[in-house]
Image 1 (cartoon, one colour):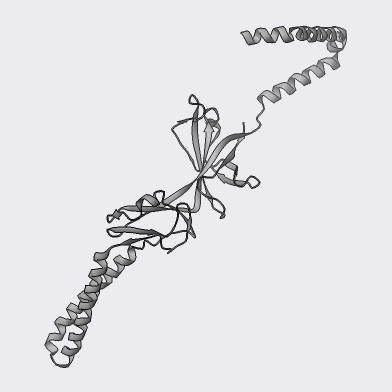
Image 2 (image 1 turned 180 degrees about the horizontal axis):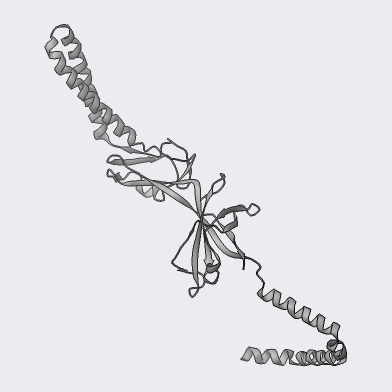
Length: 284
């Protein structure tokens, strides 16, 4: 009310002058407005106004978007031991079959050495039995195969302690947020050491205002630009629209819905990038 009163005091005189000028124009051009040509022009203006108000126009919904990985793999310790080394850093790119970390387990190393000594001894006994005691050879060969199987399992466990990456895409992003704290600490078999996020495909999530969500449907075209690549436009289609609303972090009273689309990563995109998206909803 105070704002209206101040506006009236500041601009009231100008409004009165504009009203008086319009009345003078109507009176002076009354004959023209009552003529056939004047009525035709007035009707055209009214029709144009109605067309602007009611005819459908192409509509676009604007919203903030953020990239996130579509899938990830949890890398766990294959055996208990002390976590001695990380070969990757948090957020670094990881190719397939790259060593991620190394766990030290002295008992496995000792068991492997004992198994190898026993294996060498059995091989010597087997060669001697093949020349002198053929009946003993069969049992020695069975023991020899068991020892070889045990040695192979121990080697596999030791190799698993190096935590090599097994990725599906050409590259992944490693997530190891607590590297410094976990170094030189004891980890149990099955404990999570790090995660690998697949970045060959990324999910773009667009925040849609509550008043515009009714215009969006699955398959709607989306164009968006990212802060990291402001001059490049990426595109896709809406593949999922969340049914539950979330509060707007800037305006708690407002509600937002999230529209998702899957895009192929050309190579320069990374999870966490943000930007602005425009969803084409067709004619509205």
